[in-house]
Amino acid sequence: MNVLLVGTGTVGEAIAHLVKGRKWLGKMTLADYSLDRARTVADAVGAGYDVAQVDAGNAQQLKELIVSSKADLVLNAVDPRFVPAIFDAALEAGVHYIDMATSLSVPDKQNPYTVPGEMLGDYQVAKNGLWEAKGKVALIGMGMDPGLSNIFAAYAKKWTFDDVSAVHIRDGGDLRIEGYPFATVFSLWTVIEECLNPPIVWRNGKVEVRAPFSEPEDFVFPEGVGPVMCVNVEHEEVVQLPRTLKADLITFKYALGADFIETLQLLHRLGLDGKEPINVKGTKVAPRDVIGALSPDPSTLGKNMVGRAIVGALVSGTKDGRPRETFHYQVCDAAETMGRYNLQPVAWQTGVMPIMAMELIAEGVWGGAGVKSPDAFDPDPFLDICEDYDVTVKLEHRLPGRSILPATAQPPTGAQSVTVKGSSSPTDVAYSAAATAALSAPGAEPEGDGRPARPPR
Image (cartoon, rainbow, N blue to C red; front, side, top):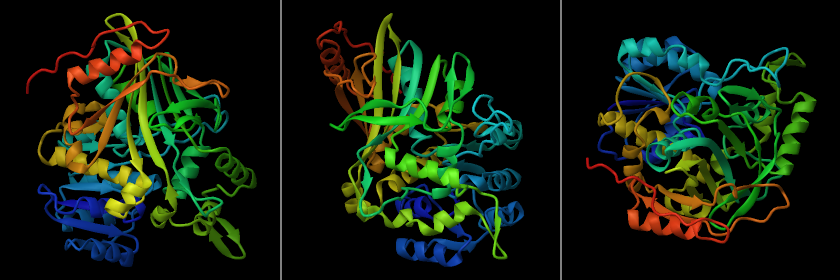
């Protein structure tokens, strides 16, 4: 399969390195607004990639490049404001498409914190019929979260629960960036967009709007991290998962830290989060771009990162009529990722996921046509190739109602984890032992293994 990668920034650079040598990959073309940047990345990888200059906001330029590069798939690795142009160019050229963040939302102008506006990805989902007619798939939101987080939810629906009542996507851990008073782990433009836009919650069959950084909680992260404060942030899973999974409540919360939140709120109060250009002594400049120019390049921060990034899906529901709760997650250690790949952890986490999806599309394992989110596909093939990409995911069977805490509460006891590396199917014996140990903790009712036997392939 020939691939056109649009964008060679923090995540695009990671993708270029991580896809090197994959047997299913044919020709790879790296495209960027800065041809020098694309060349620098290609030279660093040393895989003989082609390079090209392109304006990611120019659909005609993009279409011409898709045709000239003989791409079978376009992988969008630029920030979400360029999604419509790249998405439409791939559609017109008749090739597959993947992005890691969907088209942007548009808040309601009159009542942004009470009335839903245009949702994340609405621009793309509205063109589903056109993609179906082309016979091509547009896989939207296929990064770490959204992306693997959606797959965790799909796995829970398929294997672990009879009925799902709630899905809570949580992004946190103990990762920190040392030496900088304010720095982001990916595009500042994207961080501002998702953190300061009105976040949404799916509750009882409809979207509800919240205020930024609202409803703080202490979520108990695994790996010894423990309770970390998380807040509402706008994210794709809340609008994607209800299309494929029935649940009363779906939320996304991010562990940002009080200082980070305070800085973002100050930028907003001063108008420095604005994305429309203003006149500064005769020069048009977007305030948000000024902050971006003053901030460190996320791709260079790996050596300053310490700790672990953890993303997972806490799913609640019933199995055989009994309450059940699981936390399926992926953990990435900064030192390990830098040592193994020379990539900062969030870039690695985000970049490896669309590569795995490309393999499944190239091999015909994930097929069909139309605009789809990751949870629309069978989760098993994706989890089955995790070992090939050094992706370790873990499954914890938790005591229901003990993972989301008020700030003064103590973390739960008795949660056990099962490592699921290279297979979506942990052994029934191991899973049963973990489940029994967790549910046999004080105050819990013992329960046997509730996971259905996996059918043979």
